[in-house]
Image (cartoon, rainbow, N blue to C red; front, side, top):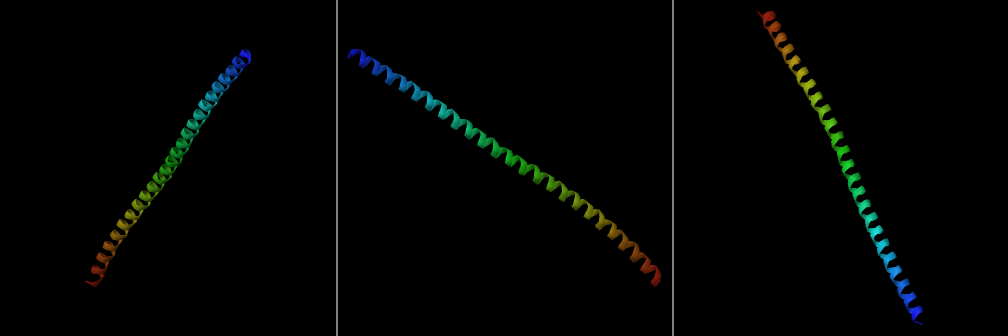
Length: 89
C-alpha cells in the first residue's frame, strides 16, 4: 500500500513536470509566432514604404519634366510674341 502511494505520487510528480514542460513549450511557440507575425507586419510596411517611395520619385520626375516643358513653352511664346511685334511694325 505504501509502495502504491509512493508510486502514485511519483506518477503525479512526473505528470506535473511534463505538464510544466508542455506549458513552457506552448508559451515559447506562441512567443515565436507573435514575433514572426510582427516581423511579417514590419516587412509589409517596409514594402509599402518602398513602393510609395518609388511612386514619389516617379511623380517628382514627371513634375520636373512638366516644369521643363512648361518653361520651353513659355520661351516659345516669348519668341512668337517677338515675331508678332516685328510683323506688326
